[in-house]
Image (cartoon, rainbow, N blue to C red; front, top):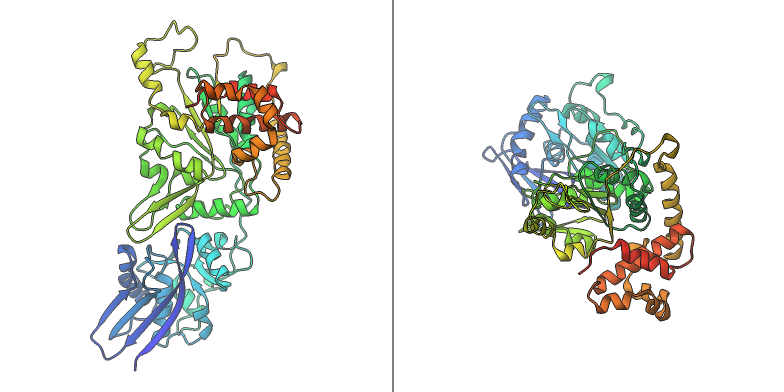
Length: 512
């Protein structure tokens, strides 16, 4: 007599999760076969062999006859090995080994090894969140992923190490596991991730660059650091996460989910509270930056820097094709990766920090007596970064050579002191933009900026003259005004003065 067994799993498209009904039909009288339908990818198609071997290793055996498994809805592409556990439970229900009807109302995520162990999978956090949103509050995951799944509040999580452990938990006829192997609630997550990003007090001198870094942190602006090697460009950029506010609950879940989907989340670390810092090598490919891969794509460095910092050291050395991939996320705040069957969307709102030498040899600062580069070589080096990309940079700071070592009594400000001012400036912006679609000055539209400043103040600022001369584009004018608002917030003023606008124009060295 044929019987249908069911369970639940989750398919991810980018960060969006979709509930999948796993249906297994067992026909004892048919020829021995195991068919899997429902748009599986290659890794999921191999689940037939993994599930068969895991059931046999767990002492449950695999039924004779024909077994047909369907992943519904069939039109939805499904990728990865996270459906193994749901398929095994559906087979056990179809063969009568599990009779508990509550088993069909739990969500199962996990990969099976041939000996019956349950292996961790990526994307557990967004998958569990999707299950809860669909009304399912009980999930079974691999034991190493239990802490990650428990980050979703309101979900009952069970972590299992082996298939026979899960089978006993569901009432299947297997030997009772020892006390140390029984399915148990997940362990508590470790303390929130706190990235050691150093202290600004380590950076000697560089008053202008430090101030530009503070403005970038306070208003969400993009920054270019230029100067000879060995004077602090990388140190400054790496300390930017330390002066940014910690992520709130919603932001932390979003960032942690991105790292989970990418397979970059360390077990038991809890939510990522510190803004992330990504510094890809200059040999990175467009796919490594944007994301990609076979089947459903994974997020790249651009999305992994979401709510944090993307640092491109020696940016002229990056491929022009790689640099051009930044233009869309800088404007739209997201990356869209298209595939034949679906499109994956990943958020990508980050602080872009680029660092560059003045010329290929790095010694072309000031008069450049030690520079060995020809004018043509220097021009080609600087032109590797396109004008449209530079037009999206709000701040341009020179990192000058340090002539003398400062005295101990003249130690630089710490990250904590700067972070305090940044937090106060951001609080002012949140209050100013309450009820708006944006929260920081960097997101304010030009119409709002011009209306708030007024025609008279704009006429006195010199912005119109810069626009007439072609020094600034319309986008450049808006970005100058955004920086001016941030400078006013840091200084405790209610709106920018003409001096703030002039200073913002000075910091914006280039514009198309």
